[in-house]
Image 1: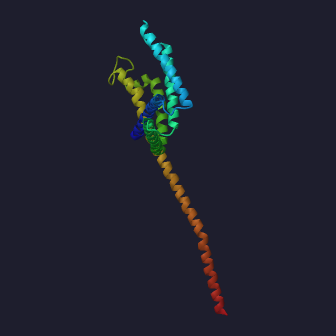
Image 2: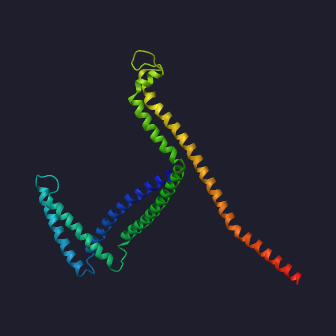
Image 3: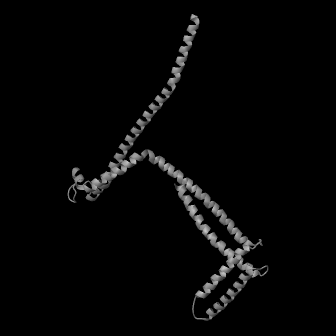
Length: 266
């Protein structure tokens, strides 16, 4: 049980680590795209258009930041945040395009993070399989413990419910039957509160335990009787199956003796 809980905890920890790795991977791809667009050499097609968009967005961002620096308003405006997000998406797209190109060595950070993500995913799958196996083993152990005690557990629940209901509704009568008072004045075993607690909680538990003991003993005797009857039935079937063979052997021996006697008489 403890191993199962530890396995679940480790799996949850790996899930959080994988989410962090995804964020790191995205940031690394954006940095790769920014570096690819800043290099200037070998850009063509989509990368060239992305470089132009990034230059335009960066110029606008610098101009807006300079204007805001001279104004009295504090904090970035929504337009600046929008431009920063647009520039980040441009870098992210350029980084993904760079990963599809022949390797240049600049993508090593992204590849290292992806390798770490693959290791975390593999370990997460292993822990998931191990947790599933431990859960099945735990359930098998619980079921093997509950199965022979099922009658006792059912009797415990029913006995406690009946005894508890009766004790709550007849607390005064039960106390009076033991010579105790149902009020604050009068004789008490300890005090009215303690006596009431004993009647309403301890006595039902005792009744439930007695019911469980009787049900367990009765179920054990019934189980032993069933096994004995089945054993006798099995022995009877075995004897019945062997009887024709014995009868056939006796018949063959008798025919052989009769044939031998007929031969001698001739």
